[in-house]
Image (cartoon, rainbow, N blue to C red; front, side, top):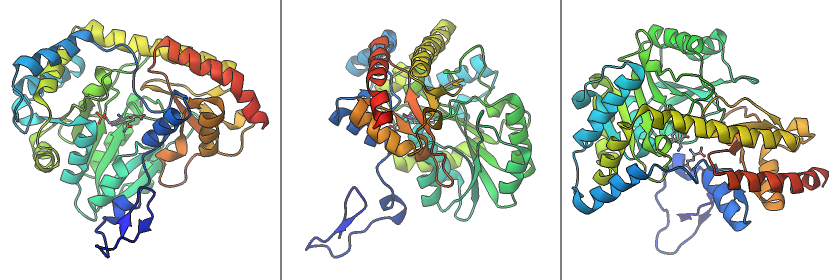
Length: 406
Ligand code: PMP
Ligand code: GLN
């Protein structure tokens, strides 16, 4: 038998039973891949998958080119090149006042995706419970399950994607070992308040748990808000593994350079998993990211200001065509509510028809749930040049009324 991409099995004569891990073979293709391929197929404006199409820092690109031509292009140390590990520690100190020892508390990974996998595989023992917030980024759950972890979900509530003490009481218990917190939160575009973080920290400490903090959007927070790493709260310094991504911070999502900051007792098991996932990450890109993380403060504020401007353009246009637009406090994304348009057929049907009939790709929010999904919200991506946003909005203005009427 062979397992096809759609999960079906087909008989082949030379292998009666193809080995396949049930956690992975039960999965469909990720929604980002699905929507991007549909966008290509239908010539649609891709406001689905989150990747920028403008604003790449030229000096970071030039540094990567120079390192490729004249630098070290063989295996670097499995923990990462010292220059990048030092830059990650300095970045933690410069932006958040964290005091990190680069030689024992930083690790370079092949993107945040690998960092998250290394954290979850390295920290979760079969039978351990893992607290996750829904909507949740799609790579967490398969890894938790593959590692034998038992997921416990907190469903965030609209309009502001909040949670309560009672929500935490319902999922934390003596088996809780790990919590995953994505802040700023994809796809909700939420930045958790200090009060929410303090409440979570209280439960984490009371249950002696660790937290995997997915902070890839740490520099994409808007309107004067500040990103507060959970790791900076009292009692949390040695309980958190903080994950960052150069893809997001330098608008170069294809680079797949990530980094983890954590106390040695957490980082060691994470590094053990990392050594057999990828072992290393291209050294030329690591050097370029080290250079980038040391850029002037203005680079980081300009990045957030540019993205906030794109958010405003897309949000205004979405409102004009009739959407109820939810608040976007950070990330690359803005969400819209669909029932206010009179649409009751659900987010998946909405996005499928939008890409085919209107020529605009978005992402259904239900793809970010395992249980009890919201089905009336869609996510649009605004990390695009003006022309892309304008074309998307023109198409929505021209095609959405017909789609809604049809
Ligand atoms: N976490 C979140 C919340 C994301 O949106 C992404 C998207 N790229 C990642 C992790 C993965 O980051 P990377 O591309 O560095 O693997
Ligand atoms: N993080 C991106 C998003 O949310 C997609 C990353 C991916 O395609 N794996 O759109």
